[in-house]
Length: 139
Image (tube, rainbow, N blue to C red; front, side):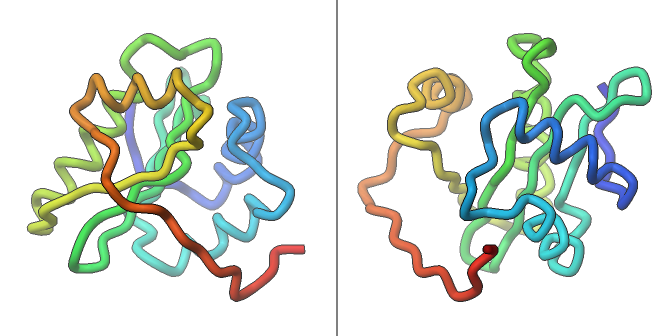
């Protein structure tokens, strides 16, 4: 798999991938999420490509305190082949170069398969509760 930065013409394939992986939610417009990422640390929106097709993605960002990962997705037909691990490791490498001490992410509590994936990569549940406040509705 070739890992490269997101290009504007990747958007339809990326959104289709996210939908196929069950990452989209009605209250989060994936097109708006992509538009926002285009203007903030765009170089940390990565895609994995096989045979000219987008089969994996990850968004990441670093705020000077810690990094966050979002939208890690691997096409269902390509899961369990190490592609997700390659993307996570790439983000970790990019963050180490920036001097980032910690990478955080959110996983839905009921998604045991994904939680197990991250545990194998050394991620552990933090003793904190995520809170959020919608400032701009996507509807």
